[in-house]
Length: 424
Image 1 (cartoon, rainbow, N blue to C red):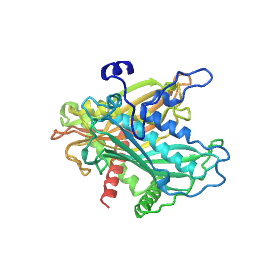
Image 2: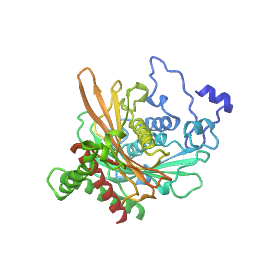
Image 3: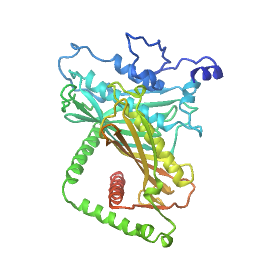
Image 4: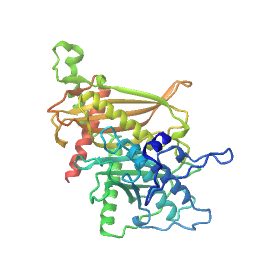
């Protein structure tokens, strides 16, 4: 691939500013190659930077609270001057390939979290785990032009006793407003015991940093309340049960009298797409487990294909919510991805995320299967929202059983709550 591109575009120019084309020495038996060697140039650069900043045992004697500015990160994508990098990130439609950006977001977020904890004086260095991605949103339906340079930035937003949240954004060079924003949550674990461990406090200085800290604190409290409410019978669960039964009642003709069912209804099971693969060592991260950004990219690409085959038009990504990292994925694991349209809003519904364009909410589950032990468990669960531009409506997806109905109702309520929070 590299040789073909080099012959086509000529010698590969040096990447400028924050990123430069690395010289990759051939691996030897005494010095195994770093995991970043097999990633795209941006991820390789980020991981190399993190590895180079690893402190010595005597580096710090105590943890020192630090402001967000000291761990903030910025990476330049010199698309205008590096044709190979530009081709790496180019989608079939000449835009930035979003799946690749998801990989970079995860790697860059890890760098920011690591920088805050380690450079703040935490020793021993905690094991930082991506607990989840609260949201990744495209603003105003825009998408970066692959012909223009792009900047990826990140900063810590809030820090608790053993967890932290941070914000990421992407903007095109020359633009003030970002075209994409993201929010990540990390938890700190003791590298030996696996138990929660205290991390460096955050010291917001500017008014904006203090406001962001408060936003992060309130979001963390809300998560705790939701987890607590899910364990008891509440008005929320009663509403979810009612919505689920209403959806099943609407879907009943499709299974009992399909010839007489409304033509605009479609069973959820008819929208499913799947793929499977064995996790390879080239996709491991710095902890020697499968890179979370790689899993996000594979999930996004399957979700995009699911929305495409359902809607009949090229879907437009709007946002991804509530990415859960439930179990780690190891090299050699058999991964099976399942995607389906969880529910649709033919007229945009109350969400109105892209005007009156129909919306399709896609659920992707990643399962780790062990054919030898005959076991399987969910490692990741992701929810993507796509709009269907140019369509006046779309078919309404309905569940076939109670489990599907509850899952759809739960997601509907979460989406509506999120829209309400944005309005507030």
